[in-house]
Length: 511
Image (tube, rainbow, N blue to C red; front, top):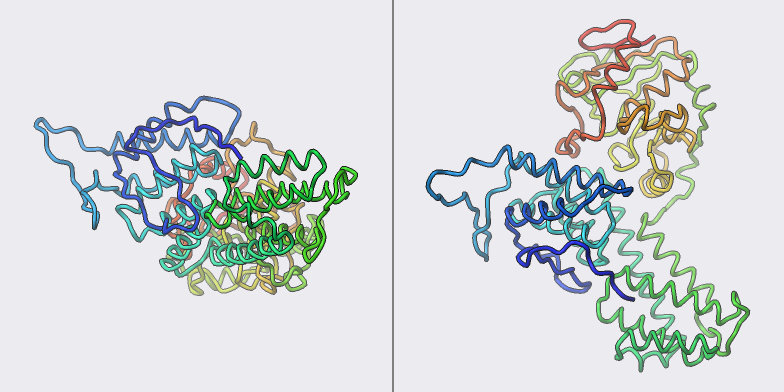
């Protein structure tokens, strides 16, 4: 019930209050770019080397942002001149304009800060989002970042509003935001039902709903420790009623509900031997309450799953995948402008199996029509609704990979789906650690490495693999996504060229 004191003490002019649930917190706090950059510099100075890889990644993103700003900022004039300013409607003029050269590094800082999961970094991410949206009100990436920050803070109503602003600006929901919004709404409805049942089961709780929550909670814990559940229960439920009424962040309400259910289980004798009297009975049995709690958590995490069998999909192990491709010619099609500007569609469709990646785009004359195997990273949903024979979803963390499958798979869109034995080929199958291959392998390299490792295809060709030298060619919704720096394209290219049997401008033949 107590909050940890933040490590990062921002300057007074950078203070960003955490939004409260139930308020009109979709409104962006106007934030000057120079204020945000000063906050980033201050935060960078406080980060120290440690074992937390998330903060290490944030430190690197901050260094890149500040270095980019230093190299692109105009030199100071001999005489003081006003900076280029942009006026915010209804407010004062803001600082320097956010140029394209700073946009991606700034968003990278916001995303890395959010991934840290700490209060200081979450507030920094919100500051970044507000800075972007102050000057670029229609920034899809800005609205999505702000929605994710608000969700992490527990400001669910505002998060849903921000997610909907993002959806209103995009034609391709590659990140599964619509499903996320549906899950948050359904989770909120189930939470309301949970609180309603608790209130009906314990009418005496209403008289404690107007008291300070810390006082009621402390009394409830003490009474529970004495074995007097009949007196403890209304105080504890009263805390939940007060939090729900006052717009407490969802994360805090969930924590209170979880602790309450644990205490109720002890009191009912499910655990702890039933130390008291007045165990939960009546119209809301403890099992049903626990099921409601679990269901609202599941829906908020991954959205509703209409078909848990995903259309009767067939799960493929490593061995089964090997048998499906054995003896067949395979081509892997890069998402590059070299492919998009070409005319190899008929040649591509002539292979036994055509492999495409992530947010691939189809232009029959240039790219061919068929997609037999779709290999994709688990973090976005581009092309998951396109009908393919086999879909391989790659991810480095088992939990996140499983959650993405539950929330993003489209029933009937694939006949076969790779199981966890195919989740992260280079690391899990090849046992190639970061000491040998430090960079995160791309989806294309994971797929290529897997096919080379299995070595059962008489012909294995790469079409348009220039490692983004010609630029990206993919769905419009993915074109604004930067070519990430976490991958090492130079090393991947060297690996390919060491094994190439023939190389032309358009095709690299490995078999």
